[in-house]
Image (cartoon, helix red, strand yellow):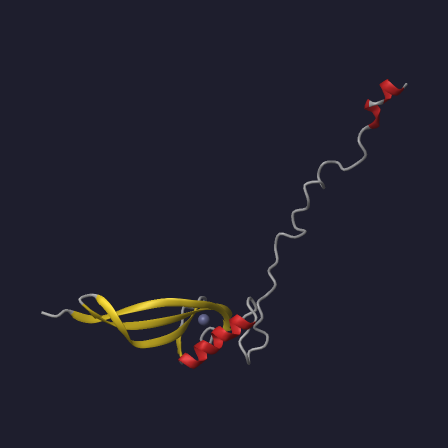
Length: 126
Ligand SMILES: [Zn+2]
């Protein structure tokens, strides 16, 4: 008896900021690659099909993208890491969310900051 079948592997390739086609939000999308492999005795041998898809993190809509487009998206990330703005969608730039600067003040700001009390030295100088 020969046991064979298929098994699907899911790879998360990248996280992109795209304008969702369903909910219209410039939300982060995960770009995934789904590879179905032929297995023999539960051992994966070779891939049967490879599909790419993006999933909106806002509404959960999954959209299949052709391999070419998926590779194009990955190339975009490789070129300018961090600012993943897909071509043809200006205005989808990530909003600046810079925290940790100037919000909490330094530790020196709350200790009076004035001159050290001079009265304590007066008895020794007089
Ligand atoms: Zn969405």
